[in-house]
Image 1 (tube, rainbow, N blue to C red):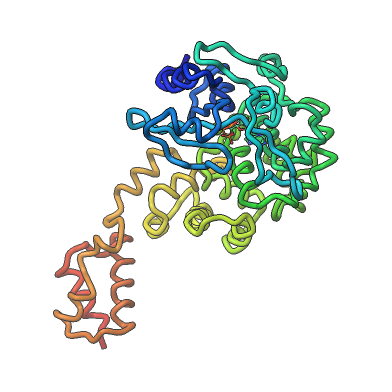
Image 2 (cartoon, rainbow, N blue to C red; image 1 turned 90 degrees about the horizontal axis):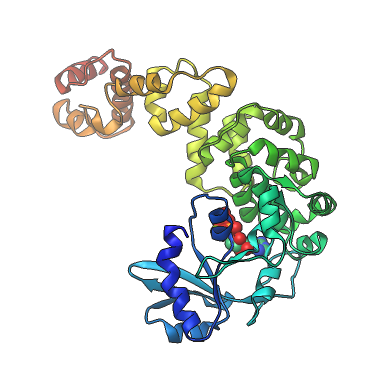
Length: 394
Ligand code: ATP
Ligand code: MG
């Protein structure tokens, strides 16, 4: 058992001592069996939410409507979810109404993929009711039950399937692929934010070319914001020999680059994908810098900042325009100042020493001196900068 399971084991045992069933489920079981690191430990139990709360002293109702209670234990929080079935799927989206049940089998049945429908009891014994172990061994992504029905219940599962192809490097099972191809249009019904999460995970997977290839052959790309007319460019990305996208910023900068997008077009795409303003800002900055590689001038280094310079450089690699990362870091380190706060001249200096009045002239003088300091034409020294500022006055 992985360390995180060992730590959580007493919680499961507390439930079983009271006569309930309790298992590790979902991604943590899958990743354990793949000898991969697990992020969150998901626990499922036959105990109803009120029963879970009666057993543990410290709980938080994190998702009680869906049967999830957070149990606090030694400073850790564990999400415990009551076995449940889902019904009344409206509009091909995940339902809001769930029914709590006592049967593990019913709970596993409503899960998306066979590899995600495995359970593990506190002793480490695997419960495999839908062939998930075989599929893990054979590296197969297969819907639980009748794929067509499962994608009608929740169309996001199609994106998840292809996301796992990329993350795990597995093959899509043929009937699952056929059902996705026939139902790709149902993605229209899914909130863009949910598709966004899966799309970025797909591209950041260890074999994004495989996931991207399935994304194209199943036709899902036609039902994602702004991708309908990008088949050729996406295929070009899928054909890259090496593709490793290590941050979400890098994902969008690379897409923008292969789509031939200007920063303004990239912004439109990111808005259509309901991205945060912070992400949009980062991508635009990195994309602007990308245009200057492999020789970004000092003011571009300065305006971009090191994190987005590194992103731009990673994408520049695909054009043969990258520079060694250490070289880039060295250039950046050699900048006389890293931000306007480090400029030795302030607006206050101009007001007090040169008797200037507040106004646009002030900002313009600061900008000009900042530029010259960045380019190494003026020393970052108050006296020097004041003397220079004086020459700008009428
Ligand atoms: P990750 O490593 O990205 O967390 P995960 O498989 O754990 O992958 P989660 O979104 O954390 O994904 O979901 C936990 C589990 O819940 C899944 O393993 C699966 O059993 C089930 N699940 C999640 N989303 C769906 C869905 N849309 N339809 C059916 N089952 C789902
Ligand atoms: Mg998870």
